Length: 212
Image 1 (tube, rainbow, N blue to C red):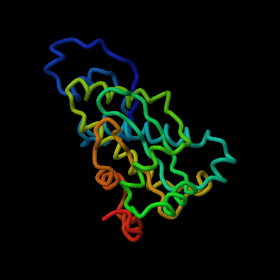
Image 2: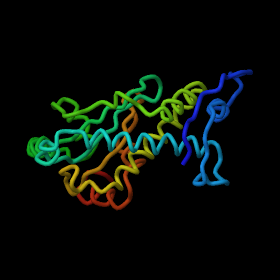
Image 3: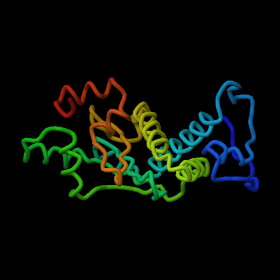
Image 4: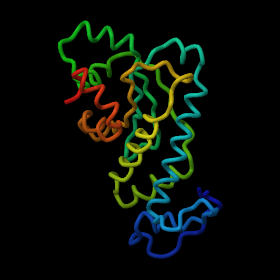
């Protein structure tokens, strides 16, 4: 692991720099766990990924314990905007609402579920305080309009969260999944799910006809 120590003054032709060069003009304190063969790009990516992952879990731990245990959830969406908005909104899909939806529709695909759920009353929380490493990653890649790198980062964090053991923290359904949704990009929801959800969970969604 490596950690931000202090910020250097940026000098030179910044407009010609890559995102990694911009980030490298911050002073980092490396320890024995930093892999020698890891590129700068990977280090910046992985530090932002790890700190955001921890921040999401910390927020979930702080939620009301009774609500977390009594309410059953079928998904958690990391709602974000790669282009301009710095915030991340955690939106919970409640199983009771999904059960009611299944009884009232003949559309059983996940995309229909997602967009119909937009009109439901949701439980949500906002990550109002973002890790510095994540914020630096956003700033550097937005400087070069490299929004796909930001989407890749959020997808990776969602993928890591899918592998987290939620027992004892959240009451989740057997097909509970977490995925990142860039609400301003109008991307295909099925593609966003495929980019975030591991194969063993994808098989469950396919078995229920929610994904092809």
